[in-house]
Length: 258
Image 1 (cartoon, rainbow, N blue to C red):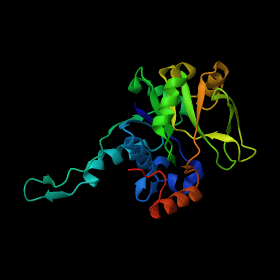
Image 2: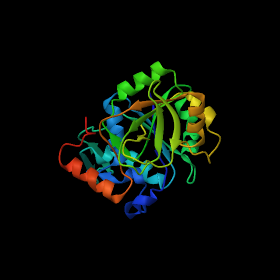
Image 3: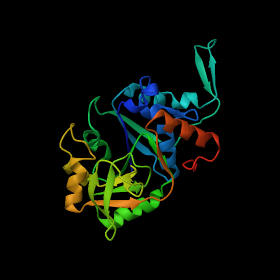
Image 4: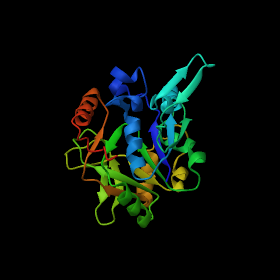
């Protein structure tokens, strides 16, 4: 499956760094968090990516444009017509499409815009600011067996996020609430699986994926949930970034499975 990553927002809550680069390019351990997310998917054999860009999208394009050069040993011979010698071929087994989905486009609109790049097949989708040790094969298997249009992963962090209302018997999402009241609430952790039918639920650039489309999917009984009891962490603030840095530097980052 192709992996769609939303990477176009301005990241205003971590403006200490996002004024210089898009939020997914903020580094953890010397690499953008976007890279960490892609490494995780790639570990499970999902190596074709569609990056939905917007704010400072050229920074993302330049990163991938220069990726091979920055990760290989190179000799630049200026005495021989600027001849370049590559001593090691270090590259990821990735195919990456970096798509401009608009500066002010909402999350749903960004997904709608990349429809030509995923075709008429199911795809994986997540946000460009969160890492996890989620069981991707199990998530995909549940989605395929469920017949749902979309399956979202759910986790239980501290209560500052919008929450999911879940039907325990059918593993279906029945509604959304703006904010969690208690830590027992489940939130959308990203790491979704979507069938092409999702595009029928998205109107235009102004559509916020987490509102009208998800509400309609709930009403139709077409939104499934995969409960994740393990590690999940987003990088919403500078404090989150520092926590991720500490975990990475400890040598025991839960999402590092490669």
